[in-house]
Image (cartoon, rainbow, N blue to C red; front, side, top):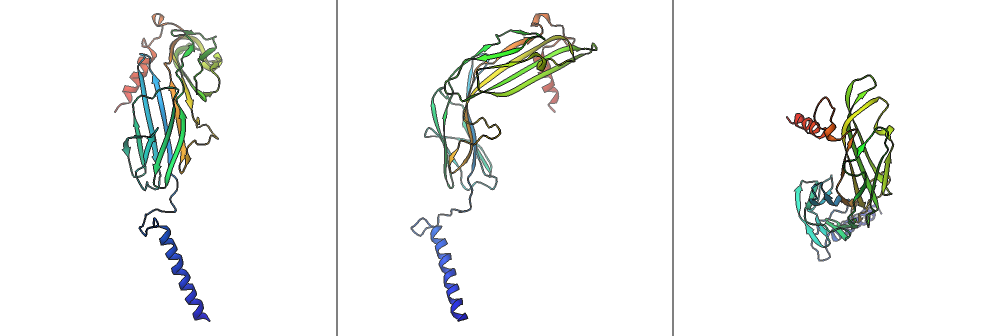
Length: 281
């Protein structure tokens, strides 16, 4: 009886091995080499349109496909059916992109073909828009609420506002110093207001001068805030966005350029560039 049981166990073993070998073939008896334990790769990327102060426009496509256990094949990235070229790679990640024009308020389909299938998502490049406040060369005072507004962008699902305020001041003891206020936040409306007590702390006794910027992006796709789910479907995961960024608004803090009273004598931008140069080894 024991001998018969051993024979059945041996037969069952060979049947299982044979079935696994058959599943590893493409049906014609040829090995495909696919690993059934391979997990889905992760995809990050964006389409962007940026307009600068001199009215020049820059476009960018950028996609990353990675697997920290190692990519089994070189992924293929398609945008509306056209292949996007790779510009950087490693055993675990490939990067793709170019700077060709990306028309606004158009639909785009992203597809990533990889070892185990393909991942895909649908995007809309938000329509062109512009900031309406504050006006260029506006002077922000210590008692002023900073109000930024912009036109609605067709197709946008959210906006990202970035505010940078840098100024020199005398504190309440008469000591000269510099202060920088920054704010980066997700906005669902077309305006944002920052009260003066957030920009000018209580230790600011006398405001001298400074410079400031407001930049707003219109975005489509998950904003990658806590709790957001990725928008890649199929056999991949990840986040891909479309972003349209118009010209920023530049304005002054405390005093216009001709009334500079700063002991340093340089503009905020000049001091910032000097600090960057001092960090270069």
